[in-house]
Image 1 (cartoon, helix red, strand yellow):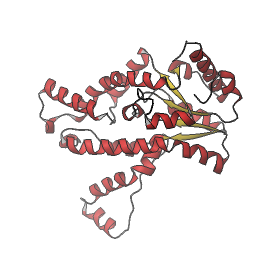
Image 2 (cartoon, one colour):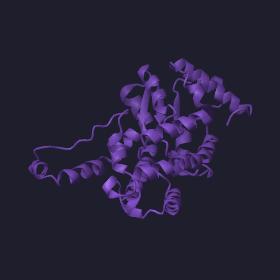
Image 3 (tube, rainbow, N blue to C red):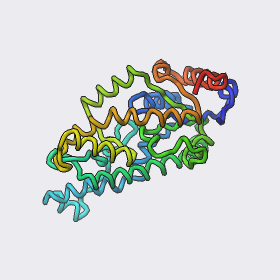
Image 4 (cartoon, one colour):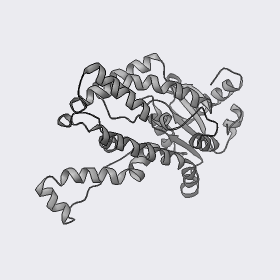
Length: 291
């Protein structure tokens, strides 16, 4: 790890961290607290994906729908209007809308082949955004003078890395320039995430093998034809399974850094509290009490 002890971390003039874990456990909220202090640069992987690597896919998809409306088609063909996704750290709906959900087109679903294509586009985009981390560390200091840096990752980071391989390109690159921190949820967090997702299911990205297994299992259990699958029904079905699938992968990733219970991180209200919790997590790891 780039900080070997809690004291070294506390004394470091440049603190560089990466937080990972399931979406909804407070990674972006924590990043906002640090950013608002004025000393921390917030690098959002999902924002980078949407603005740098998937922007053309998103705008072209929107244009394709608009071209079906004669009035809008004429305006587009004469360059009278433009399509610009409105993305922010707290509003990434354009990205998830483009990812979509597999199933019945009459209920807003995508054919599985199209869904898989978009999943692959997202995988490539996320890996590239993750590998941009070191560049943004340098950029945040060189251009803006930020002494500290936090990389706010998406929940799907564990799908594209092999944390069991000490030579994994992405894990090696990230651990060389940041302290990797797993925000670990407990059973209560899991139950709350499932309830929230059930109320408002949102598109997710899945490891291809996991998607194939889950899709076939859903078809077998429901007896639905692929083009008759309820899109929301499928992603609700997949969600709890995705949580279980990702847990051991997050645990393996934590071996590259430290683990902090999400419940502890929820108590943080300022950078000083964050620095203290991370120092204790580093020392706990060194004594065998942490990940």
